[in-house]
Amino acid sequence: MITHLNILSSLSGGKAMGYTFSEEDVYLSYVPLSHIQEQIVLATCLVFGI
Image 1 (cartoon, rainbow, N blue to C red):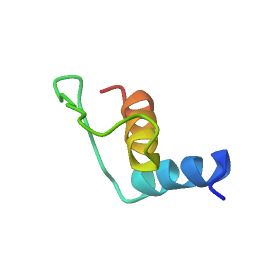
Image 2: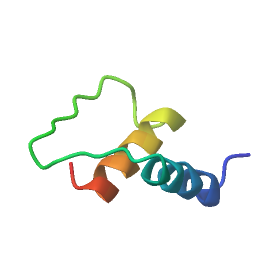
Image 3: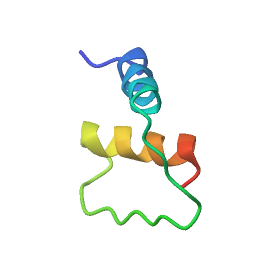
């Protein structure tokens, strides 16, 4: 079972690896929000301010 802690740990792992994004970056989604990868990417966009 995937928990909220799993999603948060994947986000913090991305920050620890040095991924950088800017306000000019754009994200286009074609995966439904019910898909777990889409939920993680959406949370990443919110955290990094995309």
